[in-house]
Image (tube, rainbow, N blue to C red; front, side, top):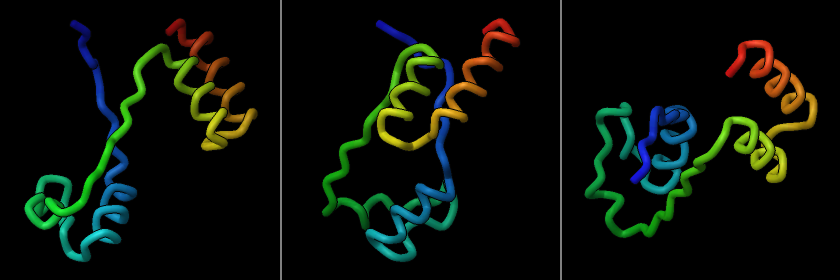
Length: 81
């Protein structure tokens, strides 16, 4: 069994995504009309692993560029995490 320490949700992106599928469904992170989404099949993807590996994965998807990866990895080393 594993434990997830933190979950990050980009509320603005989630709001745009949900409201694109069904306008008006997402009004706040705590106010989502899930019943109106019942007709949609959504397969969320979770990313687990070290912070460095997650950044490398995001880079492989072109979600972040190499400069961001280098800055992030160096900051992890400087912070000792």
